[in-house]
Image (tube, rainbow, N blue to C red; front, side, top):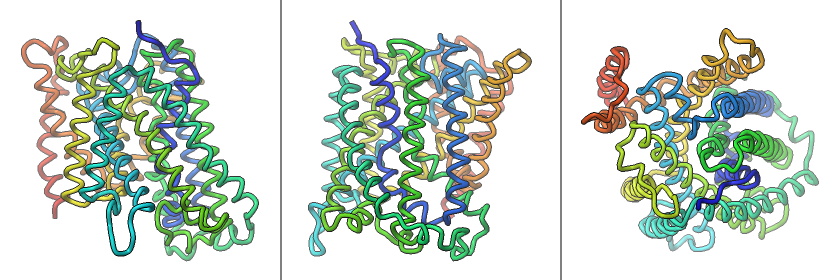
Length: 463
């Protein structure tokens, strides 16, 4: 009999999936694009937007408790087969690319212990040695999750506690060393030669990246012991993560001037810890990053396998992907996901792409799934005596639209290219009577337009 996930395991799953590699590079990432004033505005917008999104998921678990799988099933129930599939495909691609980025950053951090100026072993996590090590870690976690989601979630709970230790140590030391004059110097970021609003826009994909994973408990809601724990776990994890991100970002600007912080090598928290506690500081952060990323990677492996599994049960992915093993782990979906991660690792070694490139792609692919969550809540509550729920849905929707605007046209072109091969899979899954719910004429036209738009979009990205 399958063991169900309780509140602590669900909260750890969400928190661990958010607190991954991003938090350790956050000081430099934010300082490079924004001054303290824009940074504060950016975090306020993101904090409010993510809380709206988390509340929208909480309300949907109560309004529609029968919809297991969250991201995909909300889009499908609200907007039909095509948008449901696009949500599942976009989320799954985001999860796959996020997992690749985690494996890359793990071995980039290990290079601190192995590399010298005369000998590069792991480099930026994109050497052949790093690819080999990442592949071994990939398949170790694969077989761990095959033993059952509950087993993996229990290990993840310990990893979450382990990653919080270096973060709390950094916060305590940074509070002691905080200098208000240093923090307040060039408060509006005039030295960046960019308007305040442009600085705020440039923080958006960074702040979104560190919150990706907020939907973790909703994605695995079918495995929750109690449905009410899904919403509680999401809110608890979001509030904890928001507090950590605010403290890490703001305190860093009081330890090192913004211009100097913007030039630090990532993970920039390692350089800051060296300032705070001497030459052992970077080793503490490198070790903490490895533990943190491994925990986040375990969370994302669970979530990445869950979405195709549920989508296959409902006809959006081929039925064969819905197969489970005797421990009720989504075995076929797990093989598909980790096989895709392995292919990406080989491509990384051949192209020498880095963590920041992967971060951008993963952030872009999650935008449509997040927007559809807010829009579905609006659709459910519009015209009904539920003003608070409608306000939450509108807030989450406006945040989703703002993210699409802030990401810029280049990233939107990239998402069009990546959705095109998914549509072929969608049509394949629905062949031979699998499409028990026929597509509308509008959906058929939309598929044709997306496929047609992918060719000029690809051309624009290549030139």
